[in-house]
Length: 192
Image (tube, rainbow, N blue to C red; front, side):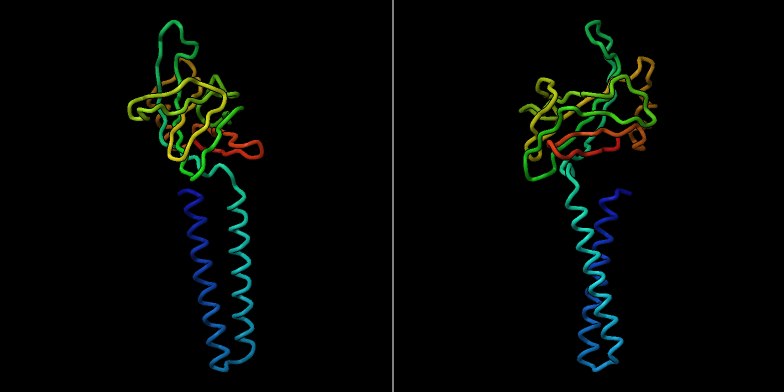
């Protein structure tokens, strides 16, 4: 269960409870209920409203939420010119409304998947023919991802890595975390 789903459900419950408390406060004053009941409902409404505003402020301060993990891909490349013979490609999508600069200094934080590269990962931007046609631009330390466009990066894996083990780790999101600088003052952590 993702934390963003829980966060939005909690906010919906808070709004519903605040609405009930506000309606209760109004009904208590119009029905001339005891003063303590009206004051209690008003206090509950105010507390729920403050809690909701605080949770919105905390959620709004998190940057990098525009990036979404699309898929991962295990790649074997035994050509002589390739340094890393086994790679895990990680595909991301900019789901936000504005262009995002991803990188430089993208890093990998360890999980259950052993990697041979962990710092200064490179990015490729989706080409004009798109992700489905495996069309990618040149690798760079940072790329600009317009809204709706994909980018990919990769981590090197040990030579003896097995595809089913890598897939099992990434499917359960136990492989590790990709730490992606998205601007000079913030970053996103994506579990892979």
